Image (cartoon, rainbow, N blue to C red; front, side):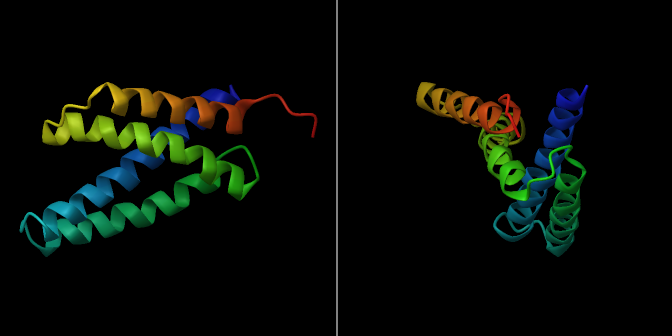
Length: 111
């Protein structure tokens, strides 16, 4: 159950961080206005709180593992929101990152 909770929290964190960065990008770079950027800043702030709910108490481990989620989630966001078509190396790279994330976060430990 703790792994499911952790995975769900990583997904919520990705939604806030990637979505927030995308909103800032849209507001500033795509000239959609400062309200988009402000919404992005709020979402990025919310992302900062989500990691604190992870069951693992080690900040470095949680944020390092989240990096794999961020990589894969960013590519997925690009597919859904911007019509980006990842090539096979994007996909392989994301899978490597997710495997690393799983090792960092969920490998059995003696501590």
